[in-house]
Length: 192
Image (cartoon, rainbow, N blue to C red; front, side):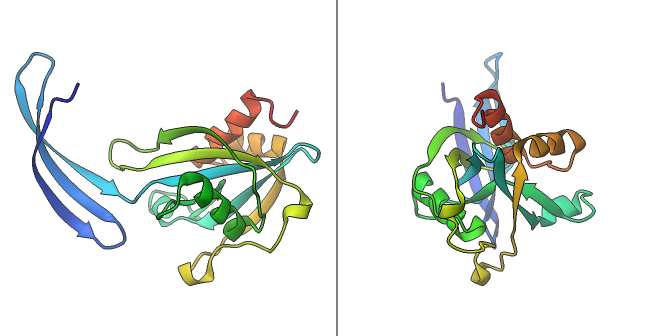
């Protein structure tokens, strides 16, 4: 049921990504027409992955600086996260394979899409595609760390799965996509 009539769309910023102000009419529950205005940030869609090793009961995560978290009270600005990246012009599966190799140094070929979700639908247009994949030491082709030309400075972490779950409880892991994938792995017994 689409009761939206866009009246005006203004670009407020087109620097890194695009921030638009949308003015629209919508029909309320009582049938009256209401004029509203919202801002929407379009940064493209993305993909994320949890790499896990059943035999070692371990996972691969990354640590990197995130300015918005620093501005919102994260004293160091660093977050521990699952590998992720923007799709650019790739499909989600190709994107996550590329990002995995760039960020973690692991070259994977078999990935499993587990779900997709809007991460902040009140203000951001992004859909994130969630994947899981097994890794082994033999798949390590580089140190990872991200793409130098993109000023990425990513630390690769191999952690025991249980330790990562404990880090969610202590607040050491606060990234939503990472928490979602860790909980997916726990609920679906991926490391059993």
